[in-house]
Image (cartoon, rainbow, N blue to C red):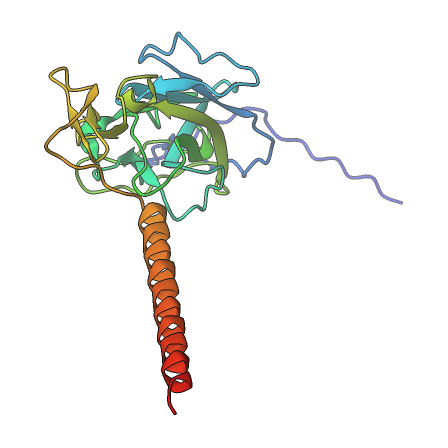
Length: 276
């Protein structure tokens, strides 16, 4: 068995024209899965300092007052993205009756003057609000708020949101499986809900101001609220009263007809007896 040894210099000097090129290469991190706890809360003010009181009773808001809501996630470096937010009269987010607040990450243009998006695609919180209203042709006064929310980690993704008011950019969010978060209801109170605001009937105009009216036979007083009996406007009878009167007249006519028939019948018999 032969043993071989190799000996070489540890250092060497080489004359060459090759210039080394040093650069930094970025590699995309693999996707990471996890659970994110997102809380959706209601607030009374734009500074998000006064929350609605929690409890068994739903919060009450005067119509036209703003309702603010905030979605938050407690993860450092996370950016919360609300692509859609909307309101419904029921707790069903798929209700066909809806009022859009945020669409494609931007304030909805359907009622832009009444919508206030404070923060979206910027931090761990989504903050927005809208002027409260009353549903048309819907008896309920309840408003539920729903948001489609996803989480983006700025350390591994581009969390830049859409350019609102111009061409929309496709967001490169981390969480590509957005979830729907809901909160509510908020009960809307109108001027007509105030006790004794109108003597008889109350409706609202386009500005949600109370408009009083009176039953037939009464006129609206100078204060626009009370109703006084009118000497010039006869009271309108109800449907039941008119029906009862009609039935009574028919009964009287029928009794009269029967009486006439009986009377003629008796007279005819008397005449027949007198014949020789």
